[in-house]
Image 1 (spheres, rainbow, N blue to C red):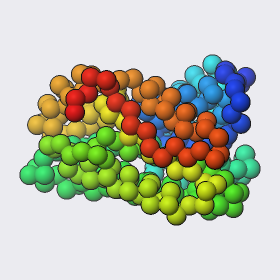
Image 2 (image 1 turned 90 degrees about the vertical axis):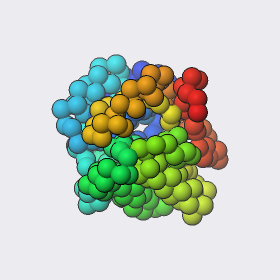
Image 3 (image 1 turned 30 degrees about the vertical axis):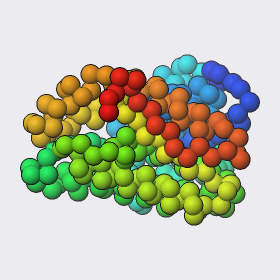
Image 4 (image 1 turned 135 degrees about the horizontal axis):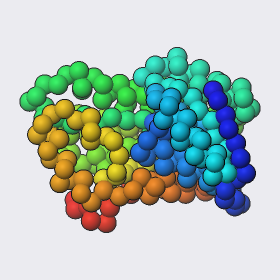
Length: 255
């Protein structure tokens, strides 16, 4: 794990927290990392692409924030546990886990892209479970912690070509709600459900029908910084306030 730090760019009454953000090399994860660093927290950016992580971290620290990096594939539970252990060993604690890694491999069910179905479940669902398993023992031991997980507006609706994707996001919503009910009140759980957001997700769709449909659907996409601000709001609330879910979507998104 590599670390760089600088003068905090923005301060307030919120205590400085140690935050691990997955999927932080681009899109929503990058925006969340930038927003939380700007709020004065130390952010550990985790993803598979080391070069992208290094670039974003350098920009955060150049702006006065505190950040470090960890290369991580969330589908590997042992690797996830090692990253969390390393954060705790270096900083003495982990306060927030932002589980943001995800894929959006849309396709018609009739296309039978079963390898993509498996990949979607592995990243979007199992990746969340691996994060919970890695971080929860530390949260329970230290008597505090906060899980923030990115679901989607797809957790609340199903549209053509998105059956598997929406199923995984429904699962994330259910996991987070069940987790919240099982946790002691000192450990919080927040689900962030974005609508259409500017990101790389649609670039990885291989189904031509689904890919074409995304062109029009994504015309009203909002900047990922909007999601970053939502996460910062949930994290910044006092410990006795649990922001359970935030839905953030373009004003023009209908439905």
